[in-house]
Length: 163
Image 1 (cartoon, rainbow, N blue to C red):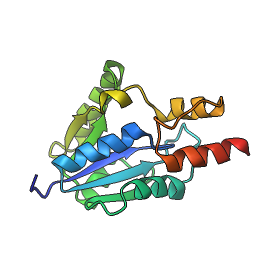
Image 2: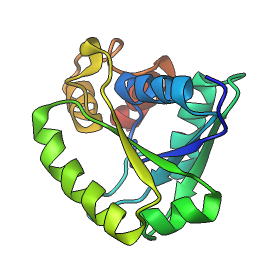
Image 3: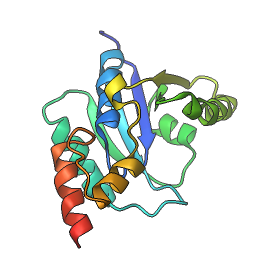
Image 4: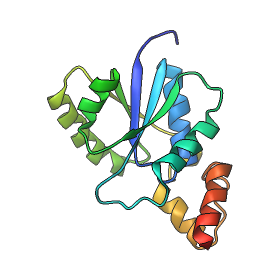
């Protein structure tokens, strides 16, 4: 698609999963640029630093045009989106249960900036149940996460959980 729309895909991505990567790929079909905004959620203590999470994405999208990964810290998403020139927010929906929260956030963001559109994308069916929390839990219990997360994340989780 030959457009110039810039979208932002915010999240903690601790760690990025194959579902997150799928959403970025889908976003690239629709938008000229997708900025992955890696945030620090006040109620979460991330297992991986921003630099590590950024490296996971960059490894997966090496050579892909239109993807950037930036840090997103304690700021309203609409203000951050305005500051970087994004016109759309990408949000992934895995299940109906995600919709309630995302719907409220979308309406609040629209109230704050009615020119910033939110686009909901669903991952491929094979990734629809995956979350970062589940990937970490399965890995911590010795389960195989090779179909849930990219190789760089699998390797890093194995090393981190040994320590």
